[in-house]
Image (cartoon, rainbow, N blue to C red):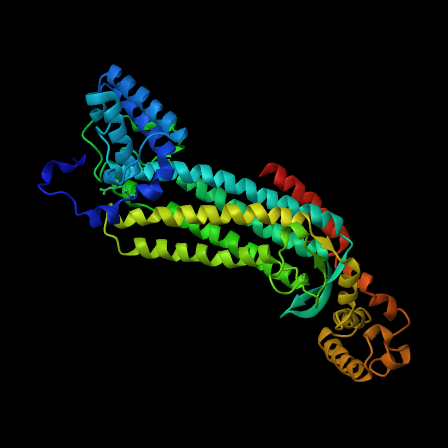
Length: 458
Ligand code: ARG
């Protein structure tokens, strides 16, 4: 007999039972469900809604069920539909009649919202810590490469020389914003919906604040309809997770490029690479590829969640049960990705010679030639045109800008003097880009120091 079977004269069709049952996945919420039930039972006893002794018996029974489930004992059944009814059924089997009082002044609708919020709060904390580990790996690598010059790109065409640390620290910034987004999302998840009932609260004189406090919530929700039908916090988390995956994916793409023979900027550690079943020479950046690939499934879940909610009338609808598999998979994917990502970064070796060599080719100092003329008094637009012509000439001569003679320079502008060669040396080009937020070694050293302070306070 179902816990809700009174009104029914027939058994549920077995296909339907299998179709609507969520125990196969929402069993993951058993801890939160039982802790929530304990707090609810305690409150029912304290407020005199049920006898204090009954509340104590219920809590004791729940403690035993929790211990059983932790130890891998305790049968969860598809017939009981979901984790909430499974726990209630186990309770009634264990403590008898008194167990039937637990669900007083409560609905599964506010219960599932409670469990999911409790669960997500814990996961956000864990993911935030993994993000900081990723930041630490980036900062440590950056610290070793504040003087390592590499080409910076736009359109994947060589643009201007930068430092490798500066490139890495750009990702530190992205992950810092991701961390802040998670913190903000935590704040909106940290709201206790219990007491919303099925949709319209309850007639019993419950103490919502007491439950919220015992369960460590910052506050209680303020509208019962919203309390049971809101899934913003799940969607918001999915969006924040999607951005984490985006940032990981972009860096993965670069790592894959840098590890290619054409770039040869970095080597990935053997422990974070894999081989080919046919080509003996291969060492593939599979970890980076897989993280890049997994971003797609997280975006997919975000779309699924948005679509699930958009047409729902208030308040609870069974569609909302679909939030859990998406949420769980997002959490697992982001955690696994971050977990392998940090050590992959930490074990990268850098081919500084290749990076420096790359920074020199492709006329990356052309802007510096123009800036030189501006410093001698020319308007930037004229300087830009003249250096464009100079580059065209250098391409025809098959020479780099630093290999042209002073006489050749003077064919384009008589402002050029011997100091042009010093002004366009690659090291000068990087060192002089020392505006706040710039790639010059002095600035990047500051950025690294600042990042360490930020991570301490995160
Ligand atoms: N398993 C359900 C869910 O995940 C719990 C709430 C069910 N409520 C209901 N009235 N059917 O959303």
